[in-house]
Image 1: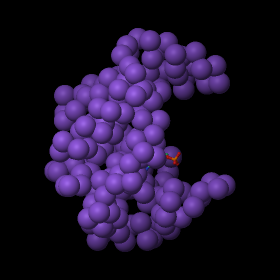
Image 2: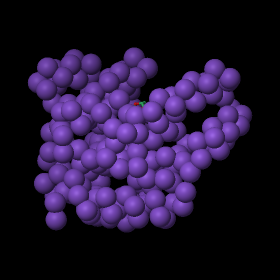
Image 3: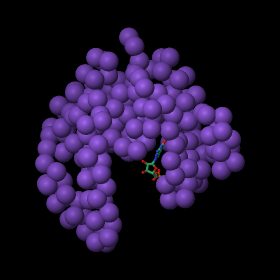
Image 4: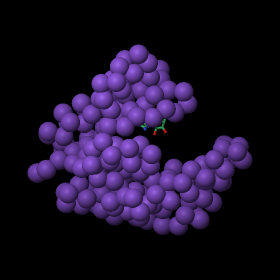
Length: 182
Ligand code: 5GP
């Protein structure tokens, strides 16, 4: 079977993380991509499993060597998907990256075979209401999140597949079909 690289995006709170993790727990031939980052490991994070933790110099050297499918800066640190890891893994397994719209579209530019999947909620209004009611966040954080959601959804048409996460099991089955059908 042909192995594929899948980029899964979608607004925060839509359940894409649960979909990806459940699918991977059921399929030995599908793994999650491991990104590189320059941020410090958090408690319990393992090098090579959660991230490859690199120094800024090492990360910049690899940018210069063109070893990233895509990379970006978040909160003052670099994050990127290493081409070497993805290429090596694709020889035996399919690879899923859970990534934002900017990262996914950049990855598609460097690796056109990358299949873009966006997970959307059955009702945008309902998800917005739910995210606004989380309680633990300031007004500003909530507004930022909602704006981000509109931004992500505005790129829907650039995606190869859209999955509506109405029913988790059905959404996981849809994702499997995409992997097996590509
Ligand atoms: P954290 O430090 O909380 O693990 O991640 C911070 C942010 O970096 C999250 O928004 C996460 O999605 C993003 N991120 C993680 N890995 C990558 C990557 O390989 N590429 C890009 N563009 N963003 C990433």
